[in-house]
Image (cartoon, rainbow, N blue to C red):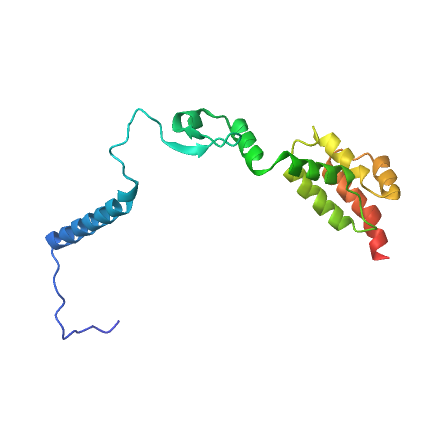
Length: 173
């Protein structure tokens, strides 16, 4: 049996009304703080018939209204952002690197990593997974290229595993 506690100090009694008042005071101060934080952004004098201008059109650097922005498709938004932040010359450089990518010596690990990075950066560069696998195999050294083609991989992961077995065994010797 646990010992009984005895206290010499008297615990203050809090009533339900006091609790309600504390809650109301907290809510009131939070609402005042929120209103103060939003005050710089509040413009009650603006024309409600004119849409807010918040998004720049990537090609023309002109403001786009909220109604226009809400009607843009995901594909169109990606195109606008790509045109603005990834210029065609940059994409061309990445595509050239992708098509010229080969295994340097027997450093397959670096080749695989860079190949996967480039496929993520330019996902539309190769039309389907079969062409992607062909591009990967095309960058392998002659011995691994022939061996990988002979085993007829069906997906890129199989081609990577086969080439790893062919070239990776050279790295260990």
